[in-house]
Amino acid sequence: MNKTFLPLLLLSVSVAFTSTAYAEEGGHKEESHKSASDGDEHQDDHQDEAVNVSELEQTGSASLNQAQKKLAGIEVGILKSDFIDYEVYAPGVLMTNGYTSYQVSPRVASLVLRRHTTLGEHVTKGQPLVTLFSEALAQAQVDYRKAYPEWQRINGLGRSVVGEQRFNAAKAEFEATRAMLLAYGLSTNDMDTLKDSNVGSLGEYTLRARIDGAVLTDDFEQGQRVEAGQSLITLADENDLWVEASLPASSDIVLEPGSEAGIKVGDLLATAKVSQQAHTIDPITRTRTVRLDMANPEHRFHPGMFAGVYFRLKTQESVLAVPESALMRGADGDWAVFVEAGEDEYKPIEVELGRSIGGLREISGIAGGARVVLQGAFFVASEIAKDGFDPHNH
Image 1 (cartoon, one colour):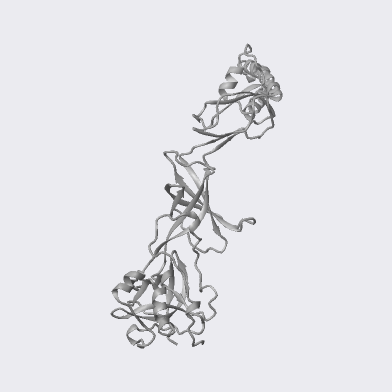
Image 2 (spheres, rainbow, N blue to C red):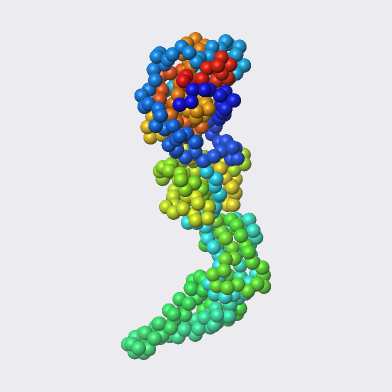
């Protein structure tokens, strides 16, 4: 192992120890579990047993006075094994709830005659949205007008008078014409009106709102010819939205249904709950989709907004972990933390790195209970380097 310490090669990884509820999206990376540090090729060179602080040698240490500690912002904390609450960031987008939203579209090729609503308007169930005309519907209405009175007459005479075959034929013709109108989107009220032979405007029909909601899209113009199934209006209940978050394919975090996540859109904050998780990886983005339900009673959020999603997690077992700022790396590639060996005296201890947990890093090779430098490790290493010592104590 390299016995020479090169202070110029010390790297300082500065990450704040205090975690925030919601950090700026651009300053976050997705924190997935990792088994080793970046580029560390010395996994089999270290012993597994913990090092007792009281058995440290008295060489390779730094003594700092109170002024130096204040100037360097030295913070010391007791290293202890504990369950850690942390957050994992993922980019997300707000969407309409696919189970409560509704696409308004004609069921037969038609011509748009009149519109009755505007973009962004909040409508109620049954409210007229758009009136159209269809030649096919006009013919179906004519057939219904013929079949209905005939069926009424035959049904009034009775099966025994007109005979079984004629009775069944009239009934089938009426039911077929009625089913065709229902398939074209007419309501039972529309058909009741159609029974009056004095009503004109055959072929005209009106599409109505099937739910209470807001008009999110209205991609059509009056006089436009539209095909069957072509979406004219999107209605959505914005009281309940979906958030679709994208996790890296390599992420192995476990998200239980109902677990909470923080949602941040600009300065707006909300809470959502995990509802569904994809079991496939998107072939283009190479990400895994997690869907969350988010209540939006005040309509502050809208579909299409980009959001930061912060999954709230907790380790399944207690771990020893320090902030990344407590770790220093020497020229030989080994990592170390600095422990308080005496009053105002700090010595390096080599450690093995484990998982990244939020802004913390799991470590091994040191016993719990040690007082560890959490902030200002670079300053301590510099003081040791001034005296010509290797901070790894080789």
